[in-house]
Structure formats: C-alpha cells, structure tokens
Length: 619
Image (tube, rainbow, N blue to C red; front, side, top):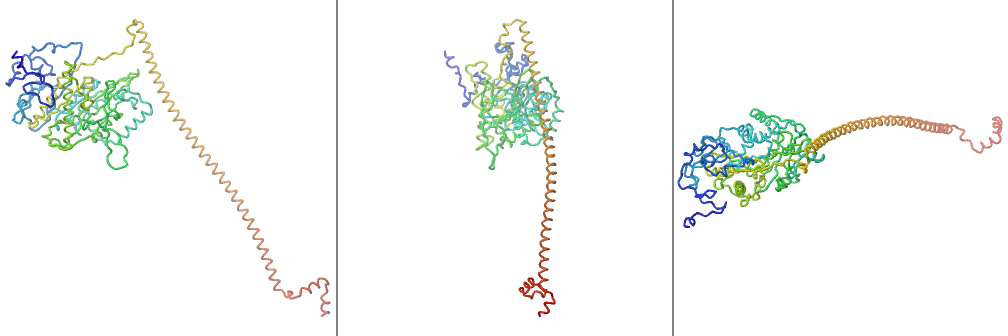
C-alpha cells in the first residue's frame, strides 16, 4: 500500500504550465541517469520503417497489439521531411544517423535553459536533406509523386524565422521553388485536356456548372487581375527552361476529359483571414482601401472561405503571376532575426476540376502553406505591432501542435481527446489534412547553429509529434444502384447496357448541342455581317440618290432665280429708260422759246386756227 501511495499521480495536460522534466509526454518516468540505450540493440533492430524512432531503435519484444495491424485496413500518416539550411560553420550539436533519417541533437554549450535540453535526443524523419541538396531533389521526393497520384494534398513548411521556408516554396529568380515546379508539372500533365473556358467552379466546397453569363464574368475577373500582375515573361521563361532541364514531366492525355484549373491565395494575419487576390475597389480618395476579413465555414465536411476569390488560369505563367501579386499584398516586416520576415501564414491553393463526358466531375486540390516563423520574443526584441504579430503567430502554431498531438492520440482514445480545430483560423483551414481526409506533407526547415539550438528543439519536437500520427484511410464507397442486389445477372447486364446507351446518347446529344450552338453562332455572325453590308450599301445608295436629286433641284432653282433676276432687271431697265426719255423731253421743252406764249392764245389758236399770213396781217 505504501508503494501505491508513493507512486506519482497523473498530471493534467496543460500548455501553460510546463511538465515535470522527469516525466515524458506520455507520463512515463524518465531515468535520472543518462544512458546510451541504442548501442546495445543495433543488431536486433531490423525494422526498416523510418516513421517512428521508437520502432527503429527498440527491440522486437514490444507490444504485439500495436505492431500488428489488420491488413484489411490501410493506415497512413503525414510525411515529415527535414531540410537543413546551408551555413558556413554548422554546429557540432547536430548529426545524422547512418541511414540518414534520424537527426541526433546534443547541446555543446551551457546556454540551454534546463538539463533536459542538454540531453542527447533523436528525431526521426521520412527524409533528411542537408545543405548540399538542391531544389530539384526536394521537389522530386516531397511533392512530385503526390501530383502524379492526383490526390488532395497539403504541403506545409514549418521552422524558425529565417530558416528557408519561403525559399523552399518559392525559390528565387534562378532556383525555382516547390510551387513554380508544381505549377509547371500540373499544367504539363493536363496540357492536352485543358478547357478554354471556366465552365466548372468550386463554390462553397461543391462543384457547380456555370452559365454563360457567370462564365463571362469569371473571365473578366481573371483578365482584371492579370492586368494588375507584374510582367514576368522573361523571368518565367528562364525558370521554365531551368525546370525542364531538372525534370522530365510527361503529358497524360485522357480522352473525353476536360480540365479546368483555379487558384486562390489567402493569408492569416493576426487571426484574421484576408484574400490576397481580391479586386481592389475604386477609391475616390487617395490611400489604400481597408481590407475586409473573410470567414471560414464548413459545408458537408468541406471547409471553404466565404467570398474568397478563385481565379481561372490557363497556363503556369498566369498562375505564377497571380502568386507574385499575392506576395506583394502579403504582410512582411523586418526583425532582428530576418530582415524580410513573413508576419502571416499564407496558403496558395490550386484546384484541378475534371469533367468527363459521361457527366462525372472530380476535384483535386493542392495546398501550399507557408507558415510564419516560430520565434522567441526575447531573442527577436519585437515591440508594439511586431509583438502582437509574434504572439498571434506563436498562438496559432501552438494550436497546430495541440491538434497534431490530439490527432496522434485520438486513435487510441477517441472519446477523451478532442482535436481543438476551432481554436485557430489556421487549424480550421487545414483541418481536412489534419484529420487524414487529405494527404499531408511537412517540410521542416532548421538552421543548424548553436544560437538557435532551443528554438530548433521546439521545431523538432513539433515535427516528431506530426511524425507519430497515423491516419486511417477513409473507405471509398463505390457507386451502385439501390436495388442492384435484388437483380439477377441478366437484368444487371441489360441495365448496364441501357445505362451505357444512355451515356452514349447523352454524349452524342451534348456534342450535337455544342455543334448546333457553334453553327447558330456562326450563322448569326454571317447574318450580322450580311445585314451590316446591306445596310451600308443601302445607305450609300440613298446618299447618292439624295445627292443627285439635290443637285438637280439646286440647278433648277438656280436657273429660275437667274431668269427671274433677268426679268426684274429688264423691267427695271426699261422703266428707268422711259423715265430718262421723259426727263430729256422736259429738258428740251424747257430750252425751247415757245414756252413764253400764253396758254390762252394757244387755246384760241386751237379753236380758230389761222394761217401764218393772217397772223402777220393782224399785227
């Protein structure tokens, strides 16, 4: 009874108060004396599975119930890769095992905060890449096979600030990263099946057929965003040549299949989700428009972001241009550790939608997640806004670690362990990968220097938790008719033949509809051109006729005006000539002497005319 009373009680889990160093995370007492337990069991260690360091370095006398699994149920876990950043003088506290899949750490100085960190520790990984490994090998091992499998996958980079996470994903102008190589790989695989218009779109986690007006609107959005993107034509061609020289991507032609590719880009900054590919609104005033945070929702198990802009792309160059545009809009700042440190978690998603002529649609999503660097506030010396950013980053990464820890233990205790997805926006967005519904691959980056020893231990502990997760693959339900089990073989065969005939008729009708639409559009275009030509000819003919009539009418009016003018001029001329003649006569009369004769005598003469001789006699 005394022994049972003195036994240590099980402590409650808490992430605010540290656990006693004498008890590990599974509440098993640690030995007080440091012993190298691995030297004595090398010969008995025959397991070649590098997924767990305990299975690799312990004897075969373990629990058979945990080592033997049912062969009918396939279980997989996330792949965790380690990449060591090349440094000029690497610390001797980091060494690799003989097989190259276990990292051995031991503190070489007294700078560690406690005795536990000074102990030698072993961390197992799927693969470990030292500083001599290039971007080509990283892609071929970590990402390339997952794209060929055509399954939804999340590629996550995790590590301390300045350890090379963003470089692994994006690379530089000469050495392409994982994302540019993945985009080139995806578009090369589906080169012959690419559809020219966005007829399918993933809306609220469901594939939706777009009408013609919606398709036109999506194409306009794509054009507007591409016009805002920087020009990377020469740079992309150089990267494309480098990628082609490093890899041999094959095109996979699938008959009766149309492929449409969409991309989206978001960042999680201070626990708020922002769209990095949104079209900026028109601002009358100067200054940048305030960003509007988005909301993460779930629809029938599908996680999506409300109001997120997804852009239809037709080439790897367009996708890379949108990626560069999102990079320009993301939040970066300078710290004492990294001069260009990302202050947010960025997720770049590539959705591949397939449409088969039989009517079946499939979806395959590739998420590339660039986590913000984990850092100690005391070492970085951040204050003010940088301090708030660091706290939110560390909180979200801690929640991610809690989710991974809960996922690794929920397989054994599903009733007691609850995965806290809703405690962080990052875990809410990545919960499908953390639950095993999507493939998960984590690339952990570490800077092997002595001053980052404790930060690297936190990163490696995080990676070891992820490495111990085992997901059971969800059972894929086959499509079947409701009453198929009650039908005999003949009826089933006839039913299948009937379904096949209907599918063929459906394909033929769709092709006929497409052909009729094309013919109708062509006829309408020809008719429009014909009508335009007829209208133009008719208008020109009317112009010629009206011009001729106007000229004739003008000539007639001019002739009539000339005749009227001549007539008026002649009448005026005659009238003035008569007046002139009258005036001349009056002048002559005035000049004549007979004007002195009395008018009375003239009257008499008129009454009694006399001869001139008589007149002289009277005088």
